[in-house]
Length: 276
Length: 276
Image (cartoon, rainbow over all chains, first blue to last red; front, side):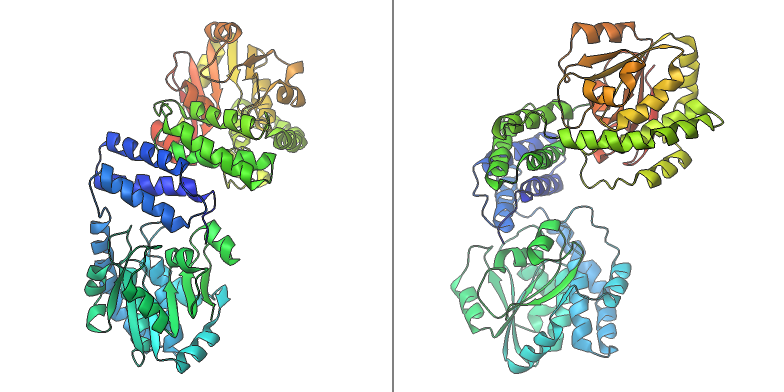
């Protein structure tokens, strides 16, 4: 998905939020904003929003001298999510259709995204709401049909914390060979190997580390090519891979007006969309 | 009030909203965004938000060749507000304390601001809510005391449409000499002489035209110096004059987190604050 012009103010807000996590020094905040403005003025605005987000990461890294501003938040998200994990498993175990319920729980985990501003994170209320709400795009039947026919699944993980919820869905697919892709370096609150470990995933499935889009690696290319079904989780992966070729299913909550518009739904809608 | 760094993304959003009123041509939108980024990168970020807003006005004016993007919206706001005017007068006439009710109605008119994004404008619901809600800062007693003692009032008007609601308050002060200040040139949806005329105000009181802050004029300076009580209406006038000297009363709805923070209230709060 190409960035909308409306992504530019949002990238600036992301820059401010990010640098404020690293220091209270207003001068540093100001230098980051000015550097972002200057860089965005000459940036390729036809890039994906994720590529614009990388400018934030680089500038904050350089000016605030911090490569992982979200480290503490990510740790906290994992801890919060892990406390819920036994309950999530129980909910799935008691469900009429455990796979279906697990996709809903994975979406609920997508709401645990500290990269989005002013999102009220009431986990209990969110869980209840998500479990009772229909998906705006619901290709679950296609999903189950395809899943039944394949052996190799690639799961593109999204954020820390959320990855514990993903584990609940991944555990419903352990009769397949599932590979989980996380980021090879810190990027906002995206899950890295450390988060996959914290979530307990590394004991269950192979976890590969992938450079930040549009970078790639031979290992990721191979995993993509081998995959018979790819679950792309969350908004940032949609932004990156919405025009990619592959047996993709996008599983996400549309958290901003422009991703929603690109998909053809409303902000706040839950989506399981086949591009199979 | 000095701009917060958070005003920068907001100024960009304002630029996008404004240029989109002038043309559907995406290339023009893009050129405006790029020009804004470049200009903001070297702007004095200790300016007031209004001064940053002027950059938008100038750049859209130049690139989209449109000096008054909000012209149609302003006309429409006036027409909507004028339809309500007889009812507003009736409400005030029937009130226990007509002056009090008129200040509440003036605040309700402040919600008719098309310069602020995604504000749902349900006039009926707004009126009902405002008439029943307390002000977060309520210097009404001081206001009535001072008003009783003075002869010369200066009323700094805010937006088109809203100025009809201001008229209802101004009509409660016609035993005084009231001068109304509007903008001498288009600036977002700020009221100009044309709007004061549409509102019927020019038949009732002297209306002076004031350059956009921080510009000023001898006529405005004189009106300010002569005024024994200045009513500064709306958020933009607060941003401009919050640190000015004068017998000021600020009457506004805090529409953004940062103005609210500067005042010490919450977003959405209504304020009648004395700086007398």
